[in-house]
Structures are given as C-alpha cells and as structure tokens.
View 1 (cartoon, rainbow over the protein chains, first blue to last red):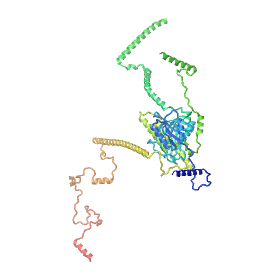
View 2: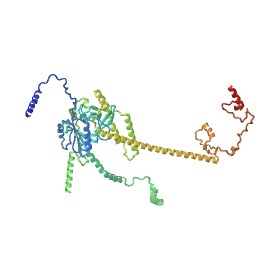
View 3: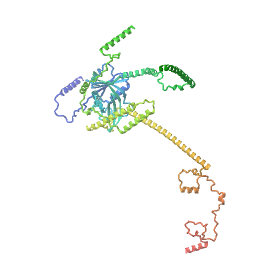
View 4: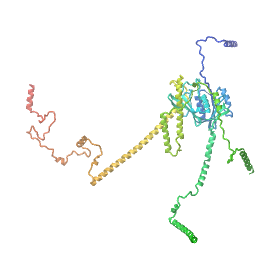
Length: 326
Length: 311
C-alpha cells in the first residue's frame, strides 16, 4: 500500500512540474470563455453595532442588512473608548465601508458611517426610528434589488452636504452586478434635508408612472460631526444646531422643575402690582353705596363743615378788604 | 466664617484680575465664556471629497438629485380635505392646543411625508427613462420569484391590518349614516305633525265661522284642497255611491215606494205597431227601426211554410 501511495504522489508531482510550461498557442473550440467581471464598484460594508443597543434599533439594523446585499455582518462589539479597532475589523473582513450603530443608555442611537482605510467618517444621532415591520408601511421589495438613490437639491448647496451625499451613495447604493443583487429596480431611497437633518425613506415602485408605496424603514439622521479619518482624525465640520439628547432631556426636566417656582413668583408679582385701588372712575360713585339715609346725613354734615370753614375764611377776607380799600 | 470669607476674597481677586485683563464687562460679576466655535473646514471637506469620490458611470451608483414631482391633483385634494378637517377639529374642540395650520404638527407630518413621496416620484420619473435608454429592463416578470424584504407572513399581517382598518372605517361611516337618517326621520315626523295640527286648526276655525254664520262655504269639509276629480269618477260615484253608509241604501223607503213617476200604463193588447211613449226601442239584431220586435208567426203558418220549403 505504502509503495502505491508513494508512486501516486510521484505522478502528481510530475504533472505539477509539467503545468507551468509554455501555453499552447491554439485554444480548444469548446473551452469556456474566461469570465469578465462586470462587478466594478466593489463596495463591501461592515454593518454591526456596539453592546447596549435598543431592540428597536437592532431591528433597524437588521432591516438595513436585509436591504443591503453588499453588507458583511459582525457580532456586537464591546464598548471601548477608541473606535480605531473598527478599522482593523474592517480590514479583517475585507470591507471598505463601515456602518456602526452605537446605543447609549438604551435610549439614544448614534450611527457612524465611515470610508474605512482613510476616511472620512461621520457621526449621526438617529431619531424617529420606524422599522420595516411597522404595519402601516405597506410596500414590499425584492431582497437585494438595487435602489435608486434620490437626493434633495439642498445636498448640492454646502460642502459638508456634498461629502455626506457621496458617502451615503457609496454605502447605501448596491453595486451593479453584485452577485447577491437582483437585476430589477423596484425601490427608491430618498434622502431629504429638512430642519438640518437628513430624513431617510424607502419607497417601493408600484408602477412606472410614479405610483409608490412605502416599504420602510424610516429614520432621521442628525449629523453631529464629520471627521477626516475613519473613526477618528481631525474634525472637518461640526453641527452648530446639534443638542445632545441628554442635554435636551435635562432642559425639559429643568423647565418642569421650575414650573412651580415660576408660578409662585408670578403670583407674588401680580399681587404686588395690582395692590390697592388703581384709579377712581367718578368721584360721586360711592353715593349709592350703603344706607341712603346715613349717606345723606354724612353729606349734609360735610357740607356744613365746609360752609363753616368757608364762612370763616370769607369773614377774614371781608375784614381785610375794607382796610385795603381805605 | 473665615473660610467662606477667604473664598469670597479669592473670587473677588479672580474677578479683579479678570476685570484688569478686560474679560469682565462692566455690570457683570461673572467671566463671560467665549461662544463655542464650530469647525467648518470647507477646504478640508472639499479635499476629502475629491480624495474618496468614485469616478464611475451613473449606472454603478444610481444616485440622482431631483426636485419634487408636481403635486398630483388627487393628492392636492386630499391635502386640502385634510387641512379643512384639521381646522374644523381645532375649531370645535377648544381643549386641543390651538395652533396655526402652517406649524400644526399633525398637518406638517402629512405635508412632510407627501414632500418625500413627491421627491421619490420625481426620481422615478427621471431614472426609469434613463435606465431604459441604457437598454436595461426594469420590470420584474410575473413568474420571477425571489426572496422579498418582507416575508409573506408579514405581508399577510399587513393585509389583515388594512382590512381591519377598512372594516372599521365602513362601520363608523354606516353608524354615522344611520345617525343622520334617524335625525332626518325625526325632523320629518315633527314636520308632518305640525302640518296636521295646522290643518286641524284651520278646519276648526272655519267650522266656527260657519256656526256663527259668518260664512256659508262648506267646501272645506269636502277637502277642497284635494286634486281635481275626473268626470268619469264623478259619474261612477253617483252611480255606485261613494263614501258613507252602504248598507240598506238600496232598500225601499216610504218615498221610493210612493214614487210612481216612472210608472207607465201597460199597452192595450190591440196596439201592435205601437208608437206609444212606453214602447222601448230595442237595439237587438233582429229588430228594424220604426217597427216593433219581429213577431213569431202562428203554429199553422209555421207548419205551412215548412212544407213549402221541403217541396
């Protein structure tokens, strides 16, 4: 037996030695033609999340994975201070783009989009998440068909929007002739800038004349920062309108906290401002208040007093006057 | 106390220093922090963009910057209806927060979604002809089955949900309809009741007038207001009777029994060709004008004539 084996090995070795010789000049007619790869735009996106993500956000990630045949999955990553590890992970998985979901406090979701070896990368806050399993989203599309990417005209206006547009097209656009993709066009992604945020919607094309049905998911991306490197590097742009969700909640709480105090202060202020009588409408208005008889007596006595005082004055003047005349 | 004093003095010194440096503005007792500077490195952004931009034909990326498609008329109508409905809602329910329709969150939601929808439509209208010009087929054949983004199970769920919604809507509409019908019926009932009361009042008044001798018109009793009666009907009514008691109307009474206006004396037996007033002119086939009815010949004559005929 052993001898036989040896002989076989020897034969294989001899064949291998023969192979790298000069190629035959004539090709056989029934030899299959070498395949030309049409798949030129080779984007591979690593989609994963960090630990501590919300269930809804996890579903959103799963939906995105369903819609992106060019993604590569990765297990959850432990939260760490530096995200540069992600670059190595992408290299290991042979990916040149990364989508990372980062959950905080089981409440807030941050999304990193990155062009991996040499940037840029963007950090977004994700708001208003609706997953594809929402029942009011009635459309459906092929898994892995190529989406049309629709951008708002405002994407052309500012340099950071231009950069975001390029990054979004490279990540969300399914490459032509990707092996897992379908050759039909049955859905559209819309990216619209509204209120300094990017609104994402996914519509199914029902008919060629523009009838649409929403497939989902829905989310809003609030850009926080654009970095020059992937998961790090110098900041190229910062969003001046961004308020962190923690700060926002704090503001709400503060407003609620001061509610009682504000009210008490307002009341105190009102009471001091409105104290006493403002002004009298007519001087004789109080005639009709109280018992009429008493009032009449009071008025009479007042008049008498006035007369007396007037009389004294008049006498005084009378006494004086004749003297002056003299 | 001493520690707090020292703190105070410390802060005072700090403030004095700040004032000396010109960081403290007159009237403030706190160092004003400089407003945060947000980086916006336009040059860097442009450079980065050129660095990583893919120079590929459009087919590879399928990205389009497109304006919103023109608003479809039915959508515009729907929007208008929605706006009106919302306005009414706000008007009728003062408990709702009164907001301007232009900033109304509910209305804005609808407006916003239609905006996205229209943008997508614009892209579809632009992109599909472009794809066709490139010689690509865009529509999926009917018998092409592939895995979908949503499972069939989920789509069933969606369908059930939609159906349920529709049923609910129908039910509520029906209830609304019934309610309005009930209301209308009630109104009609009240109206007829009022009309009847009015009529009764009128009749009673007229009766009163007649009784007092102010008027002699008794037409109201016949129901003058009713439609015109045809002559034929009148004749028939006269002949067969109309209204009132029918029983015993054909029985003889004292008057009818004593009425002999129609009695005619019987004819004298000798008058054959009578032209008497009592003779009734028959209209039968065997009768001739001016003559009485043809008489049957006597027995002998008949026998004779028969014999003649045989011969």
